Image (cartoon, rainbow, N blue to C red):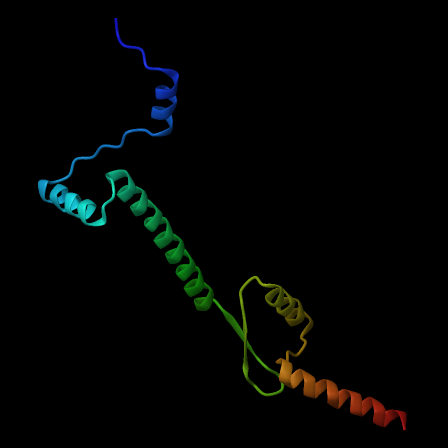
Length: 129
């Protein structure tokens, strides 16, 4: 008759499965040295590796997303000063520009837009007199 495991042991083994791998003797010696120097267990070391890999993955994803956004960034020339206005693809501004392009409107950076608004106000005030 086989030995029966207590329910607590069954739950523990279910939550903490065994991981095994074949490594070279040199890698095993290097791992032992790392564990000794850091004073940690193998499971602590592997958990740290997994977490670091997750952090590296997230950083790489963010960097790739940023590079992709910059590579596909749209720019439009300001109608007032000819400076480039940078627009992130699929943003609200991008959508507004597409809509405006269909209407053949002119775009302004904030500095030139302010000047244009002041010019229009002066023009309107001049017409009242």
